[in-house]
Length: 257
Image (cartoon, rainbow, N blue to C red):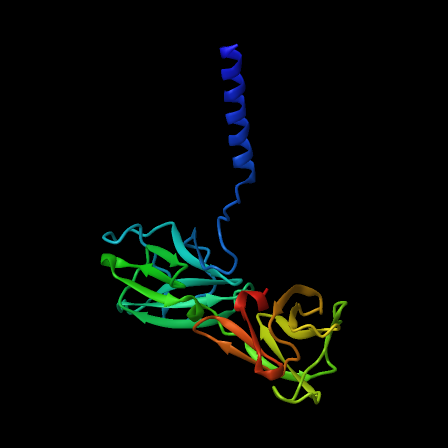
């Protein structure tokens, strides 16, 4: 009897462990919108701007070229850390879109000949390590063009999803409709801020591709009846301002591809 009781107890413990494992929340390997480091073949680079060159080393204290280079993948873009042909102690961080068009090119002094890279999610920065363990850093925001806010005719909207409506106002205190609406233009995506037909204090941030297909529909509570949008490059956010100057804020990743 004791033996059978012990078997039952062990079986119960094992079952509990299985349930705990099965119901534990899954940990994501990568968070959406985070800049990631990949190592790619050194000869797979896109066209290099004039005055620059690909120089990737095997380590900080050797001049042996590496077969791979660290690159940054972020919001659909890829950033390479190039060195200069005149061998100055600087790196050019050149960012390309998905079609290999240059969309950003910034110079960072203090290191050359990249061999390693890292990305910090808390600080939203990337660091490129070069010869003699010297390094340069850049914010994620520096590696991608900021979204653009433009005004368009309020009747030029793409198809509006069910339950939503266009309500663009002249300012935060007026209920007079505006002939224009602010929209976000970002990497081929256009984002509108719609209100709800039931007039709840919420906005639907709806993004469209170039063919007016909906690629994202995010509901944000706290404001309605848009009249203004603004971009914050430091926080990498877009703020939508509505009636009574109430606002909702979304990250760039929610208005991009």
